Image 1: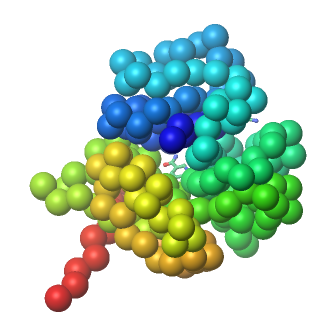
Image 2: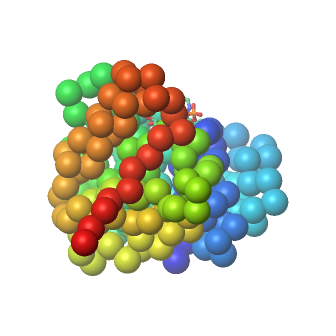
Image 3: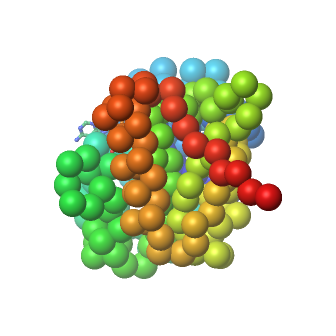
Length: 194
Ligand SMILES: NC(=O)c1ccc[n+]([C@@H]2O[C@H](COP(=O)([O-])OP(=O)(O)OC[C@H]3O[C@@H](n4cnc5c(N)ncnc54)[C@H](OP(=O)(O)O)[C@@H]3O)[C@@H](O)[C@H]2O)c1
């Protein structure tokens, strides 16, 4: 199973390197594939966006929100799992589930890696406790997404199928605390159960 990470910025770079370091085959899809610096020593490769998509079963969207629709229109995602980490911040709906359904109707959709500042993907350990990463996917795709979340060092917290709005509620909670209340970006969540 190869994962393509589209976008080599803060989120894409952090996630892709973590996947590769955990031993998961990973290719970055970049508009400038000749620059392989994003991979560092992780073992990930860098390709054109088209080649990265062709190689992969799972596609992580880690580009600016404004670039998502063009990507969906330009690439054949049929039969692939699209994990949406992008946030249309300030818009009524932060996720791109509707755009995926419209432009890539034969792709499968999951919502993950969008609820925390990227600092917490780079360092998910809070005094020896792994932060939770809330996500939505079909039951069939759950294990794939959980493997990627665990590769980053977070604890997967499954919210069910088609629960992207619930996941995005966690995003709003994170912004309210980290930014609104000035608690800072090194902030994450842990679910308690008894
Ligand atoms: N920053 C966070 O803490 C955070 C947390 C969770 C989710 N997110 C979401 O993750 C996504 C990426 O955020 P980021 O902070 O990683 O952004 P970023 O550092 O600016 O990286 C975005 C990357 O997307 C690629 N890209 C593709 N099309 C682009 C275009 N038209 N214009 C600019 N870049 C384009 C670029 O990689 P190439 O040049 O290699 O193509 C670029 O490096 C956003 O949707 C954001 O909402 C961010």
